[in-house]
Amino acid sequence: MNIPVFALLAACLLAPLLVAASEIQPFTPTSMQKIVAPRQGKPFILGLWSLSCTHCREDLALLSRLAARYPKADLVLIAADSVEESADAALVLDKLQLNRAEQWIFADPFTERLRFSIDRTWRGELPRTYFYEANHRAKIVSGKLNEAETEAWLKQHVGH
Image (cartoon, rainbow, N blue to C red; front, side):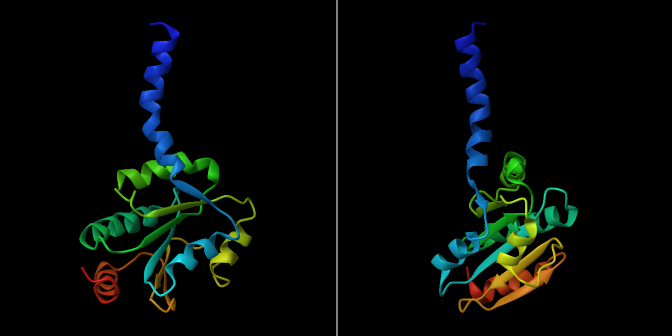
C-alpha cells in the first residue's frame, strides 16, 4: 500500500472520532455565562459527569433514554475531565446517542475555579445535575438521578 492511499484510509477511519471530539467545547471560567445567556426564560438540564464515574454513566444512559422521549428537552453536559480527554468523552456520549446535547469539558487545570463558576456550593461530587426552570431557579441533585422524578420534571417543564 503506498503512503497516500494509507493516509486516505487512516483519515477516513479517524474522521468520525475527530468530528465527535470537536463537538465538545472547552469549559472555562466564563463558559457558564455562555450556557445560561441564550437560555433565558427557557428550562434546561445541566449534567456534570466524568469518564471515571460509574454512576455518571448510568445517569447519562437515563438522560439518553429520556431525551429520546422528550426531543424538546434542552440538555447540556459538562465533563469534569481534562480537555485532553475530549475524544474519550465524545466516544462515550456518541455511544449513548447524546450527540444532540450541548457538550463541554473542563479546560482549566484549576478545577476549583471551574466548579465555582458553575455553583459556589459544589465541591466536586459527581454525578451532579441541575434542573433549571424557565426562571432559572435550579433544583440540584447530587448523586444518581431518579428516573420517575426526572421524567416528571421533563413532563412539567418541557412537555412532549
